[in-house]
Image (cartoon, rainbow, N blue to C red; front, side, top):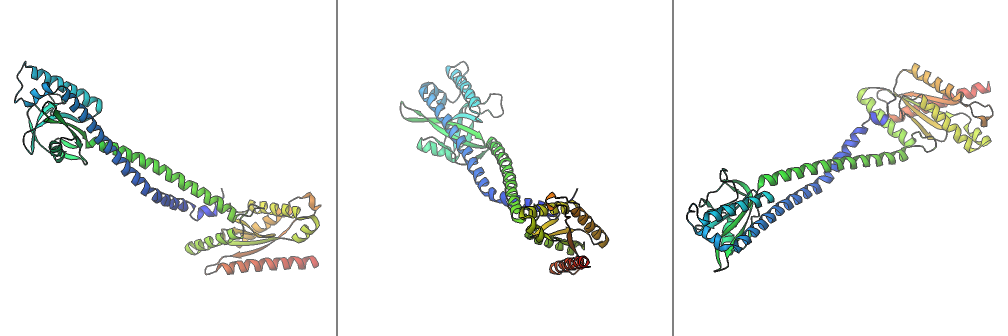
Length: 389
């Protein structure tokens, strides 16, 4: 399979650069969106905790007489109504906890400015996380604020405690008979759960924006290739134009200097092309140019190594320094073109003249082009002399 000059000179690198550029362009809004969404997750968890705490507090306020007996008691006697109510409330809180996905649901009463004691707890009594009736714990700033204002509030940041790291909310339990504060309902959402959700969100963002970057980079590459095709392609023959030839020569020269691999520039033009146009018209002339282009492509070692540099002038690049092989290729091209049959030419055979120049170490592109043009000129001069003779 013939190689492409573009592939040989870093077409893949262009895609990698486009991918890097699009990734950088997407990274900033992606990070902003991730942080924004993570904040929304945290706000939603705080609002859920606050809603659950307020709902439980309202329920207890409706049954405040029974709850107040439990909250004010120092101990709960067996077979007492207070113990039965305590167990009933705990069962209700367990149901609420399971349905809401909260980590902890409990009630507490204030002991002093920094200490609370637990009243109700949604944990199972045999669980290590269960807080027995009357057990003590310290208060955080959010709890102190709710005790001071009697207004429900949620923590703005996660709170670390002996139980773990949580996002918490507290709602006051008001005894509306005398307006006193019977305690608080506390609801905690585990920061670990929020972290897992954030990680899942992060992975989703990574996958989504990675695919978006790939698609965008690929789309840009396709657009660039389409623009490049229009910019560097001769519309009539489908070969590269002069701009493409100059670009390919520059690439080959860089590679030749770096790896010391010579290349050959063939310069061609169609003999008596002006006469063909004058006698048969430009449509037939265009047909001749297309057939010449097809013949050149058959003998090109690169898919994009043939060019129409202007008018009836063509060029071909070959990766070789063996003049014998190059001259053999030239003869095959000439034979191929002479074998072209166009009924409009009424039996007249086509022919091309070919100039040859091999890049040599230390050469400039101008020198190579100049030698190839000079070689073409000598060949045409020789053919003209032969015809006269």
